Structure formats: structure tokens, C-alpha cells
Image: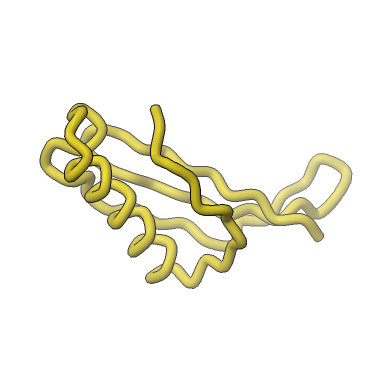
Length: 77
């Protein structure tokens, strides 16, 4: 079955969920997690703050054992 990753990057928390499509409009929750957003996080234009957000996402997904093949690209809003 096909899995879907949802990612919510907020000013206070970063949250994710992974769902598996079971067919006929049904989904099963495989994984869910959240972590506090870095201090300035997405509200900042500074690259160091954007890198902190990316590092938090990476750690959150790694700690949640979320396996995904994601092409590395530049962080944009």
C-alpha cells in the first residue's frame, strides 16, 4: 500500500503523521510525532534558523523511524 507523510511546520511546534492508504477512502495511522520548533524557527530569514528547523524535522522523523526517500533540496517557504 501507499504511505503518505503529512508535515505541519508551525511557529511553536513541528508535527508529522504517516498514513497508509488502505483503499476505498480508508487510511491507517502508522506514525505520529511532534517536537518544539526552534526559538526563531520559520519566522526568521536567517539561514542558521532555517537550518535549525530542518535539523529538528530530520531528528523528529529519524526518532519516529519514518523511512522516506526525499530528494535533498534547498529550504524554501
